[in-house]
Length: 204
Length: 338
Image (cartoon, rainbow over all chains, first blue to last red; front, side, top):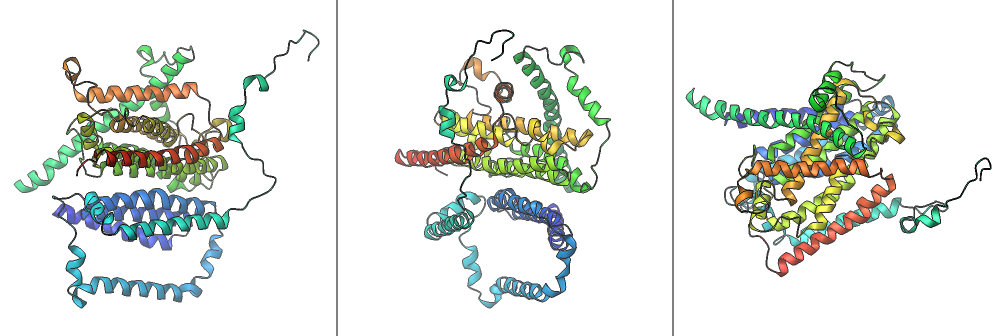
C-alpha cells in the first residue's frame, strides 16, 4: 500500500505542478508541453485507481492527437510574449469568476453524497469488480447496449462539428494547379520518353 | 523487515533485472541492425559495406557509437536548450518503454496488462513529440519544416494503424497482447484471413517510423536532414537509437498481430522443438530485412502522394475492412466471447 500511496503523491504533485505551469509559463509552447505532462500524469493516476482503459484512451486521444494539434498551432503562431502579458489585470476578474464557478461545481459533485444519499450508490453500482470483468468489456457492456443512442448521438455531433469546420474553412480557389493522380498513373513510357539517335558532333 | 524484503525489494529487483534483460539486448540489436542495414544495402548495391573495423566489419556500429560519444554537443543560437535536449531523450525513452508489454513467449513478458495493445498504440502515438519538439527547439527553418511534415505524417498514418488494430482485435476479443497470439494458436495466423490489413499495417509502420519510402521528415534532398539538422554527438545518437529501436518494435508488433508471435508455423515435430522466442526473433528479422529491402529499392514519395495514400486509400479501405470483418464475424457467429 505504501508504494501505491507514494506513487499517487508523486503523480498528483507532478500533475498539479504541471497544471500551474500551463497557466504561468511565459512561452505558449512550454504551456502546451506542460499540458501534455499533466494529461500524461492524469493517465498514470487513472491506472492507479484501476481504470486502465480510460487511462490509455486519455493518452491516445488527448496526448496523441488533440495535444499534437495544439502544439502544431501554437508553434506556428507568431506571438509577441510581452504583448500577451499586458491584458492580464483586465481579464483577471473574468478568469477568477470562471475559476470560482468551476470550483463550486466540483464541490457540488463531490458533496452529492451528503446532499442526496441515493445518488452515490447509483453512480457506483454498474461497475463490476476488476477480477470479474475487464474495464474494456465492462464499458462495452453498457456503452453499446444501454447508452447506444446517446453514444451514436455523440458521434453524430462530432461528425457535424467536423463537417462544419471543413465547410467554414474550405474555399475553392480558382487557378490552382492540382495533381491528378489518375492522369499521372496513366502515363506510359512511350508517351513520355523519346529515344533520339544523335549523330556525333551535330547535336539534336 | 521480512515483509519489506518479500513485498518490495525482491519484486523490485526482479523487475529491474527483467528490464535490463530486455534493454541491453535491445541496444545491441539496434547496433547490429545499423550494421545489417549497411551490409544488406551494400550487397544490394553491389558494394562491400562496412568491412574494416573488426571481423567482417562487425564492430563498425560500436566504433560509430564511440565516435559520436566523443563529439561535441552543439547548441544553435537562441535554441530552446531544455526542450532541445529533452526531445532526443523522449524519442529514445518511448522506443524503450513500449517493450514492457511485448511477449517473447507464452508468459515471457514484463507487464502482462489487459490493455497491452492500447498501450502500444498510445506509446507509438507519443513518438511524434520527440520530433516536433526537436524541430521547434532548434530554432532553425529546416528542422521546423521536418517537424511539421512528421507531425502531419504520423497523425495521418496513426488512423489507419488504429483501424488495422481494431480489425485484429475483433478477431481476438481481448486487448491483451499475449491473447492476440494465443488466438492465433487456435486458428490460422491473422495474415491469412486479414491479408490486405497486413499489407496496410506494414506500409503504415514504414510511415510511422519515418522510414523509406516515407522518410519525408528527413528528406536530405529537400530539407537537409529535417529535425536532425542541428543535432550532434549523443543527442543525435539518441535519435538514431530511438528510430532503429522503433523499427524493431514495429516489426515485433507486426509479428504479434499477424505472424503468430512466438508460435511455430506448424505445431509438429521439427518445428516445435525450436523454442518460441527464436521463432519470434526469426519473424522479426524477416520483417526487418523487408524494411531494409524497401529502403534500397523504392524512391521517396512526394508529400501529396503520401497524404493521398494515407487519407484517401488506406483510411477508407481499412474502415471498410473493419465493417466487413465485423459483419463476417457476426454473420457466421464467430464473435469471440469475452
